[in-house]
Length: 190
Image (cartoon, rainbow, N blue to C red; front, side, top):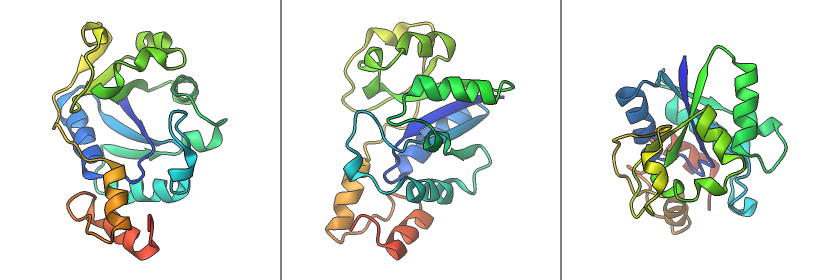
């Protein structure tokens, strides 16, 4: 099975994430998308993150009605900060029957060469790249292991959602209704 790995903090998961993942399953040769919840992105501060198990729960709520999606907590059991290349190697070893590829936003393509062992990731796994507003042009766009995928150009950020919650404003239509309900009930991000 060919699986796209969509890494992220998902702090919280929002409709933009879901639309992109859906485009990957519907419009490419990917059979599934796994949402790999990162406990700590090495490029982000851990202080602003909701607890990893709470973020995983929100991802599960958001995707529970889509059989093409799966939540993945593999990085919870790995050294921190976790690096994509290490996670890919672990998943490949654990699931040799699957072929994995990495899903990233076009805004990450220009900085991708700075990732740990980026050349290994590119050659062994490849990249499926979705459009992002204001993305810096990258020479990698024409690399044979990079597939540009037409997907909605969505400019929703988790930071914006958290700010709205702190201002006691609605997040309706920005997140899945089950995610919105859980955030309200558990008073996340307030």
